[in-house]
Image (cartoon, rainbow over all chains, first blue to last red; front, top):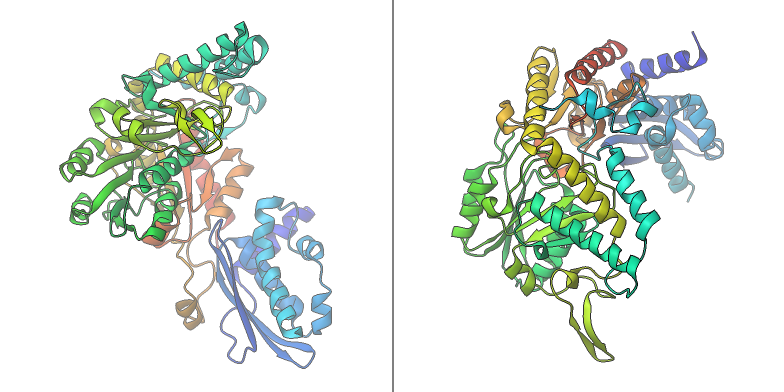
Length: 125
Length: 424
């Protein structure tokens, strides 16, 4: 298996069996991000506690990249401090999600990243 | 008869990309050598500004520009070249109309469109809501055609304009424009036709259609981008106010005002897209040589074959009328159900998986691209229609003169690849 194939498999796995999918009953913040180009939607919910992301869940509809990356980002941010999440870089996230996504599909991957970024910034205020 | 293999030889893109299966001509078409040559010839032999030069090459450029107008006018069945205004594309043609026709509309006047319209035949008219104009929409039937019953039901004495697409860029349905022209005129409404998806694909005769205006784009009919046309009945065009102001569109200018140039030049402010008009005229020559009846019959055969094969594929949902006689060369589909996102509903269905049972159009297009098949995925600039169909997006394959049954076969092989890639 090439590295590309492994990443494709990981995406498909997250797409078929999304982690942290559903309603987060005690969420402190939530946001819906939408990509008008294709209708990809991610509704991200976070439970903040002090300076930490205690829990995160999402629901959404869209292509494999948009939904798998949402699933991945919930795993990445759970248990992290708000500052750690804020320090996450777009390019680092993209390199975790995918191989050569191309500009059109990068937008799909960044939907959940943007959602998390907005929630964290909003909480920090 | 259309011979796609022979036609392909006129399109260098296919020799430069030997494996390319191009199924996105409803978005833009490829360009034959003849069109590119005509543009090059203009640049290298008589490039100059039109209409005002006193010197020889400017007269030559003006002649080529105006004879292009005449050629394009004839191609759509207009008897007078003054009835063709050069624009950038269908979108600009429709904006021109909404702006100029809108000037004489009043609060309470109505414009009747349909839910299947491209955004370019919606937004310009929606702008007029600012002055109290009411925009209404005729619905579609369950078969994916225009609901004529609903259309006539929504027509009132206040309906000043009926503006409809001739062929839907999503459903592929061919709307009965001759019949609608009569219905509109019996109601004293103007009838505007969005011909972006019909002028390139079938014989068009504006006189027989009896429309008042027809908008079309050059780049969707083998011509260059940035050139399009607006046909208008001469008396109607002549009575419209100008659209954009600037050079070319004026006769006399003083510090206090101006008088307008004659029709159609009064709608063509600024230096026009001269090479674009010449290129589009060459495209029209190319299509005329093939014969527009042949073009339509070729696409009818391809869409008929496509729908027949599609009905044999499990989970393949496709849209628009099943009768190829009523269906242009546009095949819009989904693999499985791809419903729109609904926050309330989706939050309450906690166990529902994101992938539902469908494959998202973006994923379909990405996998097909690996097989060198170019299709479109998304909302196709028809968001209200996506909502009406209850989907978040669709995929679309569309045909033209260089496509063959082999392309359709490759497409279905790729459909299978997509299903395998996303098999659970």
